[in-house]
Length: 447
Image (cartoon, rainbow, N blue to C red; front, side, top):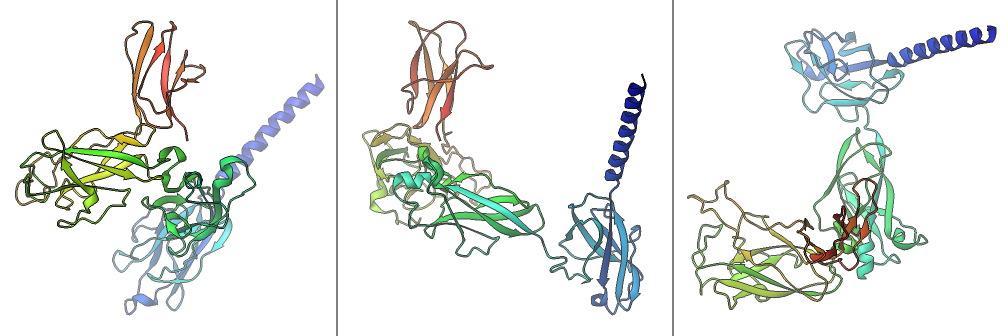
């Protein structure tokens, strides 16, 4: 009995000890000294100076309990206890009480330390390097596999860099890979670079290959120290997102006589010309009668349907971003309102579904009208999976497919094994033998 009682007694004291430690941690605090020279507000003489911020609920000067003391001349200072966790990014502003006088934007910031912390002497509304913003180590990484497979980039004698506002959009920071790694791992470039700012600090950046720039919009991130940014594909294209050979793509659009244009005019058949413009060119410049001859469209055997077949180069995206224009002008719809369709089969040629001129609402004068409607086609990459009624021992399956997307099947949604349906890569329909029982289907995209 005695050992048991002692053991229980010890456990009870251990529990009390742990509670005391936890309580101490919860009430950890930092004594922070603020100091400011109010000379810049001269000739006004403040009757009092205070500090408000994220640590005390941003009270106005009259009610702030964090009042500074005049320590000589125009310098005011005081030390206050802040109970937030060390490492917290605090925001604050000084005020003086000759009225509700706050410093201008932006807020000051500092990272809360431990124990005691003396913030540097500053001056009213002078916020540069108060205190200096911390340096965050951030890992950038990009997969160059698509360009390597296409032969437009090699891992030898070339370089990959990252440029952004964190380094002044200059020549960029050089990234490295490991050629000894197997498979596509050798195509991954990375680098750890400094980003100065109070976390989380927003940055804009792009990757560059041999001095060229990605064609995607600026990438954005909100970073903290030690952060590893997600691995992305250069230009957001994996190998499966690109044309692996030059492809003849046929475009067609229905434009009847009198079609209303986005610039307020109408289409006159036999007088005006129709052209197609797209991201693979990339985008010939819009202008009066400026459409290059190779992009002009001609009326087909179907009345009012204009067509043209263009060679889309190897390495262009399967997702074709394009737009039609009359007389070389950007007048199908609003600016940057485009059609997006995919090349959905393997091979050297592909016929896109027929488009319709997409200005569907006639705007009242004066044009433009912010309420203008658009029917521009924006296709999903893949989807619309549908299983029909069993027939003749088979289940007809249809979907919106594309290269590198294939059908999978399973007998269970909970713990079942998903199996590739062989031969469905790049298809949009198939018949599956009706095996009875439960059968489930899904689409999978290969990276």
